[in-house]
Image (tube, rainbow, N blue to C red; front, side):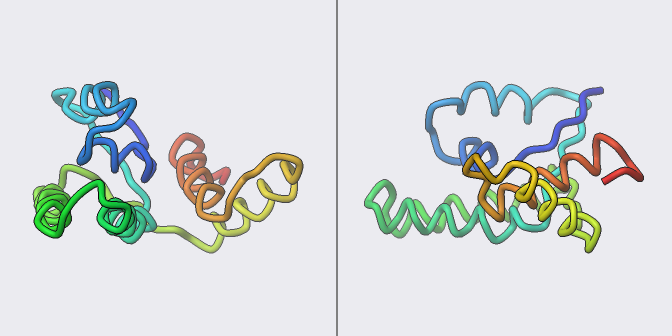
Amino acid sequence: MANAFIDTSALVKYYHPAEGTQEVTQIIEEPVSRHYISRLSLVETVSAFAVKFRLGHIDEQGFADLRRRFYHDLGQSRFRIMPVTTSQYQTAMQLIERHFRIRLRTLDALQLAVALALSHPGKA
């Protein structure tokens, strides 16, 4: 059984074709695997679908279809939703402070903190 943390950018690729969709689909559709997303991904994914609509990449029906598929998968427990804890907010801040020279955005740091907590339970 494979376990994988799926960040929002990968999750959106699963629902709407883009570079990397095939690889993400292969990971998510692997039999007997467990997939984790952060609670942030619930908002970020629908927001990304809305951006695709505003940019003209999808129409209103496309937005509704993507959202429906995403909510269906959530209802079917395709993804295990991980909370973002106070400790992970602190880890995200430390990551930004430690790596201030690179462009580590707030939500990316929080996603990374959740992934680190999954890979090192009790440490992040």
